[in-house]
Image (cartoon, rainbow, N blue to C red; front, side):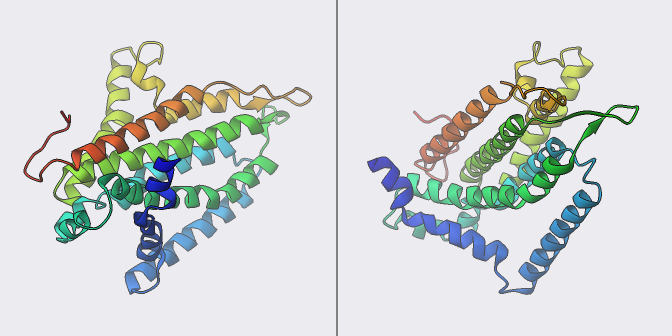
Length: 279
């Protein structure tokens, strides 16, 4: 309980949540106003598109797109969390403030995590439209099945857990890089390698199945595809929630904690030292 108070409830760095909101949603400058207007227009467009094609708006596919958004959003939010402080010469002032390295890491992470959760809440409306109106049809046009609500919740939790993992990964590289854009490039390069390059290489080698490749088993988009295959119930049948996704959610949350702890450990090194494994 004491650790919870120190890192979250009584952590002065929780002001990062407000700072993130003002930085990305504040209308104080013209650039933010343009970004907010564009995001609002895109969101309204998504709602209009989903509503117009609500009979075909598969909610699992919407969660799939949400996961892709989180994959891109987390590095954009956090690549300068610590590296940016070094570039602005404000990192030394933060280190002498009455906060610990763990409080700094948790505060930075909490700001981006709040943004991820806020996006997930905003996207619940188009997903709810899909849940209410989507019906899977056979080639003959008759209704074949509908989405299992329990498996959809599982997919949503998995998507958010993946977003949190990417946040933790980004803040880790931000702590180990002196430039924000280097941290951004490193994070995106790792994500592209893990999500695109590696599956292509293993598929070309005939090792694309999760039974032959453990890494693919934890691929978020492969998991959502499996949830899509198991998230349908035929009319008159009871929904049978699948266990696909539960191990991956636990691994994502565990890796999030590991990267946050690892980040806090690396902050103890001098800026001239580049060590990824603390003694």
